[in-house]
Length: 121
Image 1 (cartoon, rainbow, N blue to C red):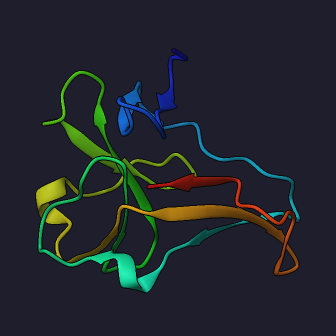
Image 2 (cartoon, rainbow, N blue to C red):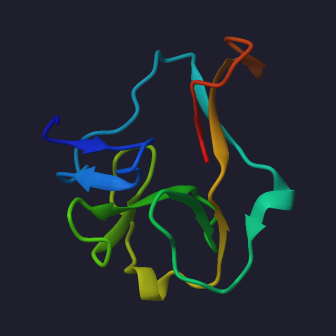
């Protein structure tokens, strides 16, 4: 396991190893990251951010939530830039939460491939 990693699949999905304060998703200057969700799969149960979910808080900037490896109780979120969220899980409500989402790479609004970079859920 790398010192800074988020597990995306398998029985350990959602486990975060290390902190992401200085790591994020890096792309070429003209490549954008697009997170796609299906509105029909919105988790609207009023719960706190679940591990391995995409959360869109009131501010509208997507956050990925996971849990410290070995402890599903200690959860936190971070943005695509690797910046940790500014709120604790109990301060993040109300939220839009998706446990299924895709991440695409685009250039000039057009996908770079016919498949997403990754799919979760």
